[in-house]
Image (cartoon, rainbow, N blue to C red; front, side, top):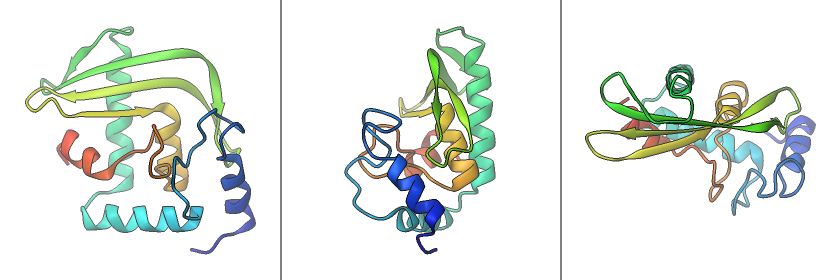
Length: 150
């Protein structure tokens, strides 16, 4: 994929201080199209499906919300804690406004954890974007595979 004007504008919005203090790219210096393309290749290599990941992340978020901020057991195998803060975050593509929802999933058998946000789900589903390397909110595909048992 090449850098289109839309991708260029989205990448500019990802800089620290524009939408969030930290931004969306961490210490990643690659351009946005390269980040998305390389993550798609990793997803394919790991035999992961974007729609299936999104579906599972939504499932855990909704189940976690039932705990009202306390950890809950989901499907007997995971502990899920969902926290919601006041306010909303705009997508860097400016096509969505998400709640400030943070989710932590912990596998009960191994203790492995996965952390993501409501915006993480949108970024993956709509744009194939997992955030840049070094970003606090990057979805690591190897962790997704292990923690979610995919």
